[in-house]
Length: 364
Image 1 (tube, rainbow, N blue to C red):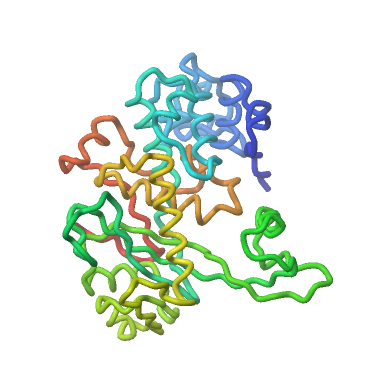
Image 2 (image 1 turned 90 degrees about the vertical axis):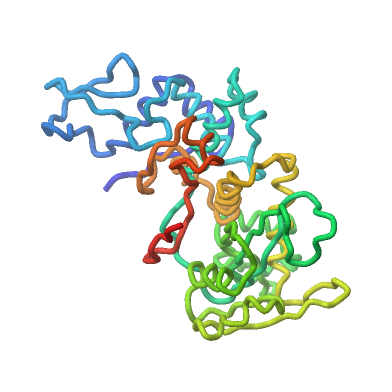
């Protein structure tokens, strides 16, 4: 049985684990070949690192790249730079901008930091996520600057983002409201459901579980029903506002609960607080970390990053390996400078769009 390798959880721990390039190579070797090296061409078990520090050569002169299938493939940067970049990407709760990323890694070119971040973001995406279940809240959000004279769902130049949030119930014995320090300490230790302890009677509370976010072209019934059917399991209870675009959810096998919004814009009540909280956190993250300077054609990458961080805010350990492309996630086409900068012009690269397991990929 293979013992999982440790991952850095703090900066001092990262510095102890990866003091130099050689430590990164040993760690990379252990991740790629946990049971020992075996040449894919001749099955030889004897190999050594080549001078490039990126590939190994067996006794029969066969060369195998240790970075193939990862975000580091064919990179000219040191492995230590990539490891530190993955650590920053996977541990900083609000994320990091390309400018700060370049400063932290000592990169002289902004473009290098920008592409590195997008590569690491693409590594965080799991394309075969399971659908949301139980009770789910769904709503849309408009992202972008103000557009005068366009009320309601007439979005103008803004981007429409569909948001679905799974509601999780748990037993709380702390006597404090969710979000308090004591509760947060429990959440960091593991799922709240496993930490109802103490002499106080447990109180039933709720929190936001997994989230799904996706850029949608419009708020029509066809678009919204397609979003819900791809991200929410049939039989779930879906709570939405009174928008007519959600009117066909019951016909798709969902228990639809409607919460009509007040004409004066007051709170929609007890059924939609979680999805509004997620939307608020998303806007604060994009504005605080990136100052709102996100191009529309790259917005899916930032939504994927936000969803990954939010869904794993209690379990951050696997994120380091996934960001580097060293987890069990399937390999994807390699993202390069030209591909990333050609997205606006309709290039062949598309930011990964996670979809539930068993759901066929949509064609555009």
